Image (tube, rainbow, N blue to C red; front, top):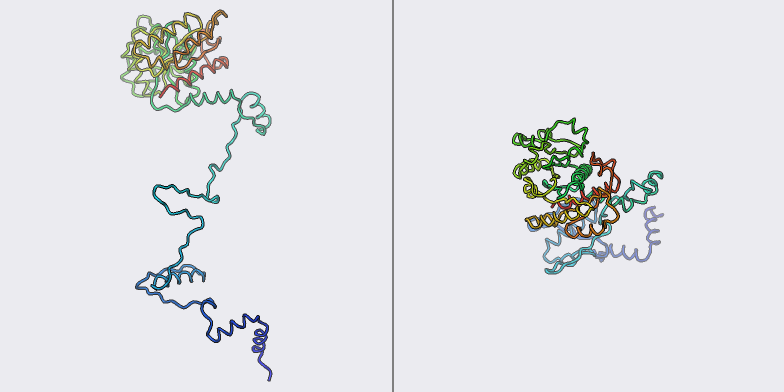
Length: 412
């Protein structure tokens, strides 16, 4: 009788199977095979009274088996402890007094920046021209001079916390004191975010505002002076009200000095301090043109409130000697710190002859102050009229930037 098709297929499979597989099947039929051989495991009924139930949230058979093994290990006291699993790169246990290095995976380390640093763009000179012509393809970067200019601008524009005052003084007139006040004030106004204020405290009919605005414009302006400001000082409660007593040369705000000879020398130290206190409420940087000399009525108040000084000097022998005398007078009258941190500005206003040793004058004064800066001869300064940055030589503008930077550096 022919065999059934299923039996025939089974017989063929058995006959064609490998000997090892046949032996495994025979052992399973006899019941002699173990769980370890077949890969099966006994059903475990967890004791819910002694072991907490572990939730199974995965559909993976392997994960379900691992959870069942964990439950069996916690419920059976005879079960061997599960082997501890530690990552291969795990750090050693912490020991007090030792510092273990924590390895950082390259895959998790973050770069310091996601954007490459852009090379600075040149703005002037041949480098700037080449950059513009090539549409930025050739960027040689700014020159050394341009980098120095940018550093000066950074120093001038430094943010300040509080209000500071710089007094500009000398023992001799006509050596660039007022022109330096205007030039430095305009430079501060150009680079700083907050406008500076310049005060004309010259007792001899100072011309600070005339040098900043021009004589024609000043004569047409409302004749408000420092005397008018003093008369109404107590009623001023805002910058808007204060601006009515001021003049403006761009972003440089100015208080004009008294022009009447009969009252020009009447400003006292107490009155100046009151004005300085009011200015300090609205301006972070103030410049005070002190006039000639250091003994007039307001001078003690000016020096008392000054954070640093500009000592104006010239290349003439008399100008250099008077600058030295000014520093010596300050040091011997209780202002030694102001003298030590002073900025001596030598203005080549009169273009002295070649017989004068300029280097010797500079070396002589440099050792008595914090910084010495020379302003070259410039018709825009020497004429005694309007001082505007647009008409000054590049060397003169550079000198005013250096002075302005040195002033702000001294504000601590």
